[in-house]
Image (cartoon, rainbow over all chains, first blue to last red; front, side):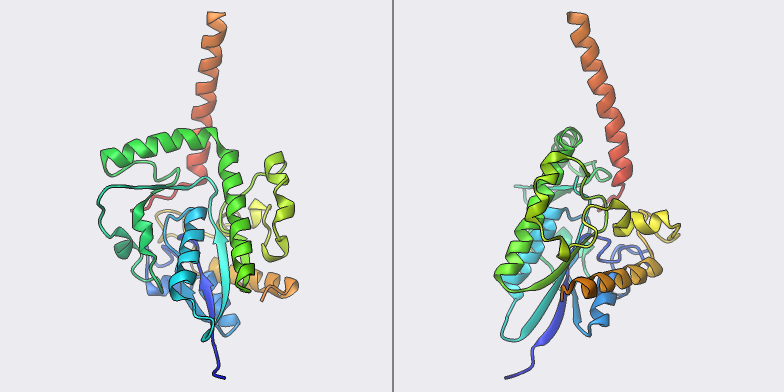
Length: 254
Length: 32
């Protein structure tokens, strides 16, 4: 029997891609020094960093499931997955118009590119101005909906967590999850009622916003002068990889 | 009655704008 390739599949948004670490949106250097790639090296695994900038949680799940559909070969691959979730108030909305292959331009250093991302408008509260009239119209209605339905957005993210956990279990894949930004609000009954359905031994500090990658190191005073949009530089990535390693070892995730 | 409904609408609008401002600070990233 031949030896399988040990792979750490790293999904997520720009934080997982190490965006702006060296000032550029995407680069081989950024990904190589991201917390996910550090973690892969700690376990002697080959890092496959497929994170895409601006993804919402449903987009992260889509990219992961597409990777498994198109790339996974259990005969030759031993895959573990790192799922860093992003801000729960992001959304991706299907677009019906002809579009350029924008994802190939903005995500050129990814280990694998899920081009189905081109089929969606990526909306976040900061990225609320559309480039076309149609996009702008979609974004305006999304802004209103999200501001008035924050908890609904969190519920959808909770369902995404449950979906991915069952997806990995169905394929006997080992995984670990964490947050990079605000995910859940405590003491909301609809969220609290979903918690027993989630395996939190595979999810580092699921309910603790202060432990999410971006706010944690921002609050500790780390500053990246090269970043335009407050992404962290090398040191917080290295430290977060240590935190993840400790959590994985304590909970036997891998 | 009309005044009360009008005032409640104004209050909701103020709350919306306040929350919008807070959420834009929470997720300030812009992607091209």
